Amino acid sequence: MKAIELAQHGGPEVLVLRDAEKPQAAAGRVLVKLVVAGVNYIDTYQRSGLYPVKLPFIPGQEGAGVVEEVGEGVRGFRVGEQVAYTGVPFSYAEYVSAPADRLIKVPKKVGLETAAAVLLQGLTAHYLVNSTYPLKRGDLCLVHAAAGGVGQLLVQLAKRKGASVIATASTREKTELARRAGADHVIRYSDEDFVAEVRRLTGGRGVEVVYDSVGKATFEKSLDCLKPRGMMVSFGNSSGKVEGIEPVLLMRKGSLFLTRPTLDHYISDRASLEERAGEILRLVASGKLKVMIGARFRLGDAAQAHRDLEGRKTTGKVVLSID
Ligand code: NDP
Image (cartoon, rainbow, N blue to C red; front, side, top):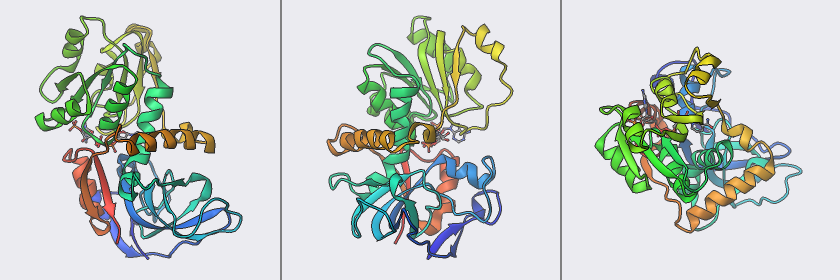
């Protein structure tokens, strides 16, 4: 089969289309012929070596396709069914062998492309607003990079919880997308001082929670946007890894709470995966959650997809079409 493989860590150029061994439907697993693979920021961390992986490595951990073969002991999936998943490695490829307990059936109304586009980022937005800091009606939250894949979904889900959303993004086009996703206020953080703006918009009070995926460039200023005993949710490193934080800083900035969550720990059992995915796919099917696919690339152009994602050129979701 064709797959994107990296033989060493590095820039996007290490992503090369090669012939790779087709995986098998071993016991408990399902062989999926992929139609679409989702591109996520974590794929760039694994490529660059920020999150080291065993080489050679096929990136990607999200996709959707058709069941081609069912391994021994698997119940509940049939050949020809449309399925999707998140958290299964080696997805920039024509086939993936997925553990059956990680697969989700794709509702007809959702379709394969949208399913591949929404699972990783949608489930992330879901756990952030429901579990990491469960938003309540009237809460104020700050969402950085709000025109991005996670960002647009996070803004929509935060609004559904009844929170007021202040959103940041780097360009006018991006702040407009954040507003269309439902943000009450938008800040162009490339030009404006977002701490001063948040203080002004909240009458000096600050927000209950910051959802910060940008990392290094925004971390410390995000703490200054929180009200006393607010919650800093640092969930990404788009601008680089946050380093050297001393707990006493949280005291000085208002007895703050800090968490650094990751999706795996919020869908580690089948029940929580089904509950979160079920809710997200129902919202998508009913048109209550909009999934914006901002860029489509062919599998062989994965390097360009990474360049655009890291170059802040994308909005919404980036996907790879596999045919
Ligand atoms: P995005 O679509 O959000 O793309 C990243 C965005 O980050 C850019 O478009 C850009 O928006 C912003 N950004 C700010 N500074 C930089 C910089 N220096 N370089 C590049 N981008 C920058 O990507 P995803 O939706 O895939 O992921 C968003 C973040 O969420 C990532 O950090 C990812 O790791 C994290 N994540 C974490 C998960 C978890 O469970 N912890 C799960 C899923 C994603 P702008 O131009 O508006 O600033």
